[in-house]
Image (tube, rainbow, N blue to C red; front, top):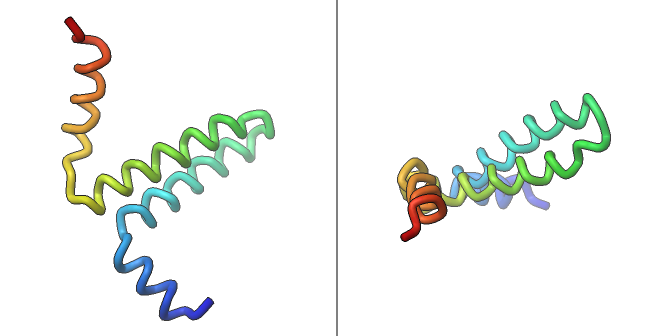
Length: 76
């Protein structure tokens, strides 16, 4: 791939890129301490990606989490 295309993608998707990199960093820290934590690694990576998408959409992540928790635990 061309470096300019990669940089353009990173510029257009800063939140997703940050989320993936953060998820990879945290995931590799857990993988370093044991192979069986691969499931946990996948969960971290997926959640980090979703948070990155929320940043790209300029949505409030705290509000999103509050809505999910309130819908799950405060359902009438």
